[in-house]
Length: 99
Image 1 (tube, helix red, strand yellow):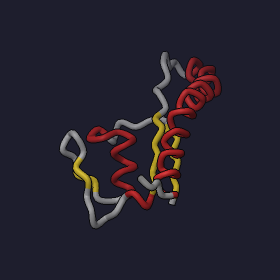
Image 2: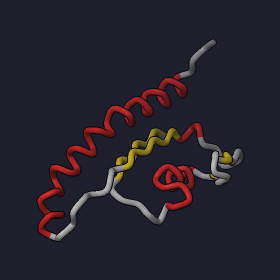
Image 3: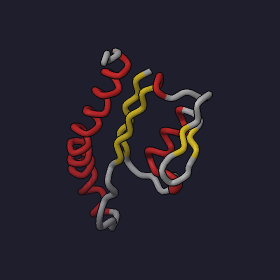
């Protein structure tokens, strides 16, 4: 089976997301922990990591997610990965985008 460059980039972006998630979480907490304590915040939210590979998302081919949400655009995919149907409940995030 032939693997295209698009597939390679998509896989690399996903690996980057998985690898960077602990780093982003650790750095976010270390940077904001003191300010949060001063403000009376007892715990910080978990940072979400999102990967978008633009050539894998086509407006002409909507995708139905496991929970029934239909994603039609790049921005819809971004919103879904950030929070699914609870998108309004967002927090810190790392977004990796490849055209």
